[in-house]
Length: 289
Image 1 (cartoon, rainbow, N blue to C red):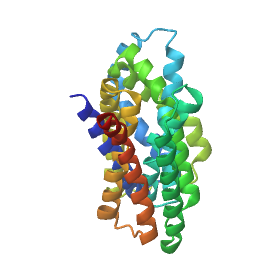
Image 2: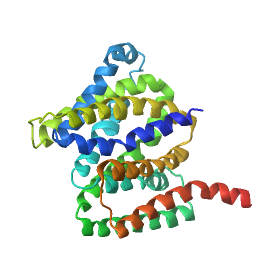
Image 3: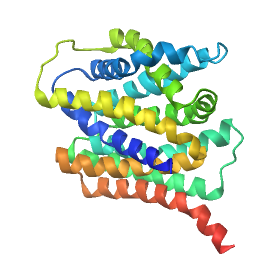
Image 4: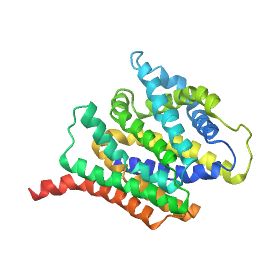
């Protein structure tokens, strides 16, 4: 079942915010994004020239654009945002991605959202408000940080269907290899522009976190995601994404010891619960009818 590839990818991604917090003790968030992409590129580079020849010329500009959007654009927004807020709050923003997929489909792609989508989406939004407001008690949750991570979710949701179409044309291996290389290249000008601190303060936790993010969360996770994404439709893929914040928040509390206020916990539960319920609601309605 190819769905297991998506679940493994989501678990790897969910742990990236925790690993990111460890790397911040060593280097700037923007520089970390560039180095994680470079590590992933070194893994796929031996096969790049071989697979790039298999990409039709008319599809190549799309691979360049998707490489930029799916890697530096999303990563920079996420990890600059993470540097301003807690890993648990950043992870909760990921729970809104399924609703973003539905909303973008509704307004731009002709996939009309149902009434329950609007209701669940409103509850999830209120959950985010409670999360951020409750974060004032602990002082580790930032509106700016959460907003940047949420904007990364908008980019992800906007690219999901486009990415699927290109993978169908190229295969997961060809697309993943090519897009990682182009993502690394297109990240360079943003690294030069946005990096605030260039010195690297080497420590074993930072190195371990960087290698984990570069190999597991960048190359392996994207390869598994791209391999499995063709086995499910885009709406189901968006639903599966709802599991990502569950894994991430558990890891943030256990490994980072993050302090979450009761109101923030209520907001987190509102986001996760509505996302999970919305994923099974259509099936329950069909069975009832």
